[in-house]
Image 1 (tube, rainbow, N blue to C red):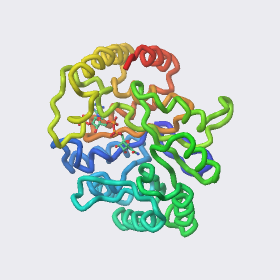
Image 2: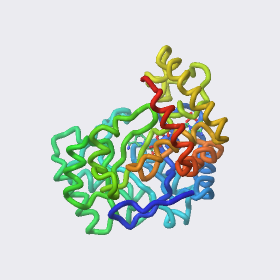
Image 3: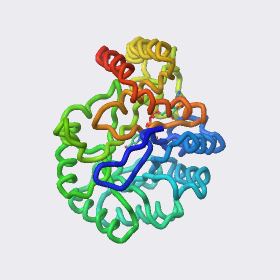
Image 4: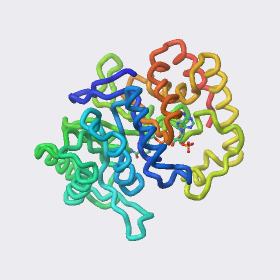
Length: 321
Ligand SMILES: NC(=O)c1ccc[n+]([C@@H]2O[C@H](COP(=O)([O-])OP(=O)(O)OC[C@H]3O[C@@H](n4cnc5c(N)ncnc54)[C@H](OP(=O)(O)O)[C@@H]3O)[C@@H](O)[C@H]2O)c1
């Protein structure tokens, strides 16, 4: 495993992070079992993963409980990145982003209690505000939590370039989290320019790329149209429907063939490609079981092999949507 220090921070994390959304046990089907999840987290740790990304949203806090149980005392030796600002409606099914200062504080304190720590390593705004709180107020609230020692660093997820620029101007942003994969490349438009306007200079902020496997699709395991239960969000993901899926599956064949050629797992090739981009610090990869983690951590080595990255660039370029 390779490690990276995030620009402008003292945070050193593994270049492959463990994404804890699925282990929360909600929205990812009926096959999530805590014993598998705990084993997956521990295997990640054994294989050198030091970054674990969670959120109050993931299983309504259950992902935090799984991480706490799996990591035990090792919690202090790794970076647990969590999120802030999601408020549930009464049904517990619909969530909205509320980023007023009072809720940012309340939600942060709930995470401190759930994770059983005095300071959160990294608190990231989950998605832009759906009420009318200006970003400035949210950033001030995060700076206040940092001054008080409740968080060490803060970040943003899922913002557009102008807001990212605004946050960077404040000088205190630790991380930016965004979707990015061989088949989802909107990050390369304006966002990557904000992150690294000068090709020769260091990036202005650490970038965590998520969904690098397109929710499992780029692992190459779906050779026929999968049928997901309604409890799995992929049942509502158009990439997993009829014609679109079969078009994608033909392209995934190229990735699978490349994986055979270079003797690495297909998942590691997909995530490794995202990791190879100079703007990306770390890839967050979701996993339910140890065997998946064992494949996914190989992304670190894949990204460090220029000849493999070159091959993957050609395959990514052949994707036609
Ligand atoms: N900030 C945000 O708004 C945001 C949004 C999304 C995600 N994230 C973060 O990013 C992480 C990763 O994203 P993601 O979980 O949405 O998607 P992902 O990493 O693209 O896909 C994860 C899923 O793919 C399958 N999988 C993983 N490794 C595999 C392997 N080696 N072989 C076969 N299947 C494999 C597993 O599901 P099955 O076994 O069921 O197929 C797993 O749950 C999340 O856990 C979360 O921490 C953040």
